Length: 159
Image (tube, rainbow, N blue to C red; front, side):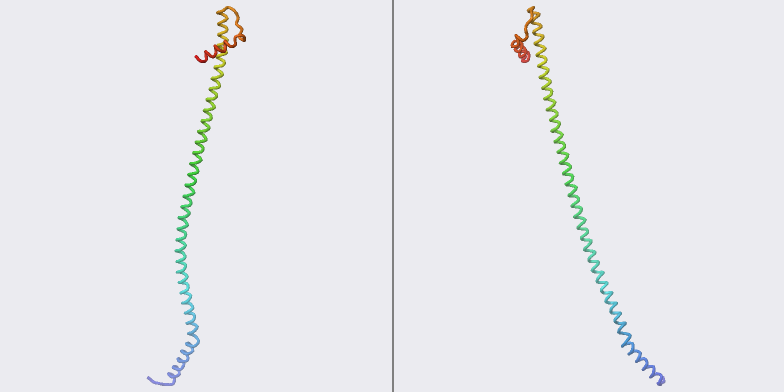
C-alpha cells in the first residue's frame, strides 16, 4: 500500500468531518433522541397511571352498582311493606264498614219488628173489642177501657 498525499488528505477530511459531526450534528440528534426517550417514558408512565385509574374506577363503579342495587332492593321492600299496609287498612276499613252495615240492618230489623208488634197489638185490641162486643152483645167504648186493652196487649206480648 502506497502512502501518499491523497490518503493523508482523505484522513484529514475524515477527521474534520467526524469532528464537525460530533460538534454540530450529533448533539441535536442526541437531544432529539433523549427527548423522544423522555416522551416515550412519560407516555408509558401516563399509560400505567391511566391503567391504575381505570382499575380504581372499575372498582368504584362496581361498588356504586352494588350500592344502587341494595338501595333499589330497599325501596322495593319499602314499597311492598307500604302496599301490604294499605291492603290491610283497606281490609280493616271494609270490615268496619261491613259491621256498620250489619249493625244498621239489625237496628232496622229491630225497628221493623217493634213496629210490627205495635201494629199487631192494635189489631189484637181491635179484634178483642169486636169479639167482646159480640160476646156481650153491646158496644164497648175503647177509650173508656184503654187500661184494660193495654193490659190485654201486654199480656199478649208477654205470651
